[in-house]
Image (cartoon, rainbow, N blue to C red; front, top):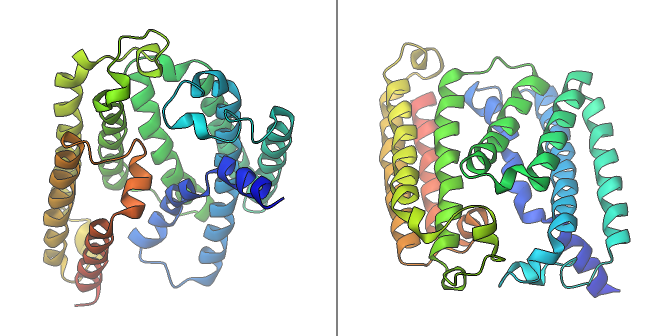
Length: 298
């Protein structure tokens, strides 16, 4: 019984729920974290999107269970390893999807429409779009941006083009890194057409393009952040914006270290899971919060 519960929990990938913390970004950047109604609404949105994300992950695993069995890591997923039946997985995905839309409806009908749009695009991604070179990477980055936009829409906070531009290039670089990590994995180097990497259209010959593309995208996001610090908009929210320059150094440090570790094959296939287990990332995250606090209240 305990093993079954663990398998159902693994299928939902709760460690990926941290991505949905992006919903709180509009609250943070607009300095409205002390408004209780907005905090409650943001929490509802967080759990709504988390359930919806888990539903799409389960559907993706249902569609990919055959190829996952040939994958060195994904073959251990509950559906691929037959720890959970396909029928049970469908039931769980349906329940999660329905509950997520119900929670979204508590905020607004616009939120429900946006979530449905995400679900449709996510399904198309699982069925076909993830096999298209470049399109898959762009969509992965858009999925991150969607979460921020969901926060803006659900909390009725005006969106910032600075924030969306920064996040797009940041997450585009992260999506590229995922493909680079797969291509550097020794288990992917065999010329097997059934291999997932080749099925998606990528090969090791693309590394000389993907590697600099990912690094450059990260650098562009940092440049956008620096331009924002020098803009008139920053003086409205921060009394001492010069402290924000400290974060540009933090971002650059994180970017450099991350890509060096990728080159050394020390980053797992899941970048999110890597950062969750990386003490250095937590230290840098703390510094980011400190610099924002100083820029706001100094």
